[in-house]
Length: 137
Image (cartoon, rainbow, N blue to C red):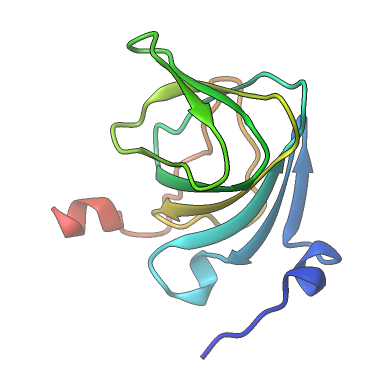
C-alpha cells in the first residue's frame, strides 16, 4: 500500500514547477502502478498550449474556472469544478485558466517525475518502460 500526503509532496522534489503551472506528483512510474497521478495547479491568466504525443491524460477539475480548446477541431469547452476531460487521441490543446485551476490528473504511461513540457507541448517518451497503451490494446 502506498500512502502519501499532498502537503508532504508539495515540499519535495516530486513537486514540479514550470511556466504557468505546478504539479504535485503523488504516483510516478517507479511506484509500479502503470499510471501516474498528479495534483496540478494551472495559474490564472496563462495560456498553456500542450500536446501529449507520448501520453494519454485524464483531468478532473476540482477548483477554479477557465476553458480548454481542442486545436484540432477549434471547439472550446468550459472548465469548472466537476468537469473531466480526457485527451484520448493525443489531442493538441490550450488551457486558459480564468482563475487558478486545481485539478487531479492521471497519465498513461506514467511519467518519471521531472518532466516539463518541451517546445511542442509534450512530455518526452519514456524509452525505459514498455508502453502500457500498446499492452492494453
